[in-house]
Length: 604
Image 1 (cartoon, rainbow, N blue to C red):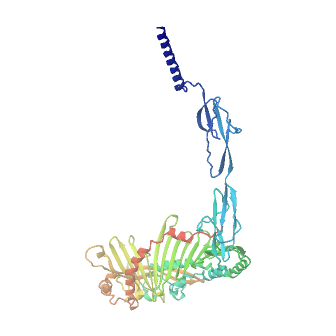
Image 2: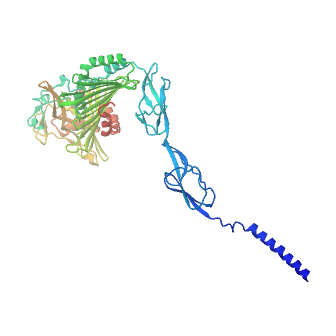
Image 3: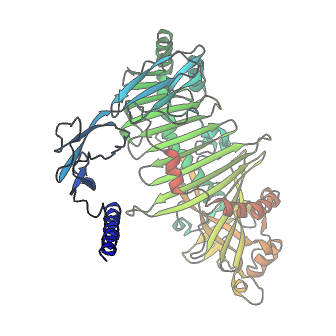
């Protein structure tokens, strides 16, 4: 029994040892009493990066990567126990809660500005800190070429502006132009800037054509002059119609500007000689030369693409009085196209472009008139012109009345087409005037007046070209002819149905014509109410019969051969050119005219 008990005790003892051993091996961590502490990591600004737990006695660690910027190059120096404190050479073993702050140093980034002279002489690069500026270096040289400037792209489309503020690597590229003969280019400009708009217009069609002048003191001006019979031979005729008058008036208004070009003529030889002497002594200069010559500030400039000749001065001009003025001439070196801009005071300016076969000019005058004139001549010598005019309404700054005209000049005729019809109120009116090119005589004109679908086509003739009428009287209501006591009668259209059936087949009406006279050495304009005969085109062939039917005492009225010989020209032009004008007239706006005129020329 004792022996069995001894064996049991031994077995139990062995089992106890085994259990203790198992307990020691599998439960060591849960029984480890080593304390843990929180270590908090901060960046250099005091912002928490991370909070971590470490066992007492261990060495804490944290990896911090600081990112460089375009401006700064950052370096992580280590950890400190306070923000901005001294860097610890090693971190101590953990023995409680702890905080560590990143210590970071920084230096400005440096960048290099490289100058690519694109074949020219070398230009040393410059390395500077972020935010510093780099000034323009000395210009490089290149045999046979003229340095234009530095650009930010290799295609040299974008010019660099100095000083450059550096915020990264920069490469600048030299822009070159082939060297040009500046003297020859300036000579070309100065020999081809002149424009005489009248050179495209027949002499007889100008207000300055003295052969057509009238006596301003005796010419009939109003209907009241016809209170008694007036012989046809005493009536003014062959004046300009409303449409050509508009054209002639704009040409006349432009002359003040074109006359100002004589200022250039007066000093061009001396100023060009001064420029040429300057170029001789400064062959590598960028060709900008400004100097004083009498009352004129003269600037001559060549940028490689254009050459400019500019005068600024103060002088007295007809009508406008004393004004500050600028005349700016320029030429495209490659194409040879020339531009001229003339400004006389603030509100008055004219600009024009000369082409090989024509010109375009636009003007603004006295803050009231804006107009654009375009003329060209084809290989056969035919001249085609277009004019658009805007007149600002009195007292209204944002409203303008627009009118336009086309004109055509060939071997025998001048045709003027436009919307200066002066017709019936409420009707859209267009006019086609026909003139003798060599005499300036108004042969006839045809007017289209329309409202809704109703269209009238009326031919108009000076009474000088109407046989069968010798004298005219007007009592304020009715016309009388040939010293007859019976009033002149028109006839109804005579077509059944519609408003046109009640329209007049023919009649006499006053129409405004414009004449010119010379008084005290000046050309004056005289607007005259002139009696004219009209007939609807569709019944032109029965005019003589229709007149006789309504006026039995007028038995032989007819249109003279001097007008009928040109009737087919009148009718064919009217049939085609009015519609062409309607398509053209809105192409030019007042805004486009002002943009074309532009502003005074200035140089940086």
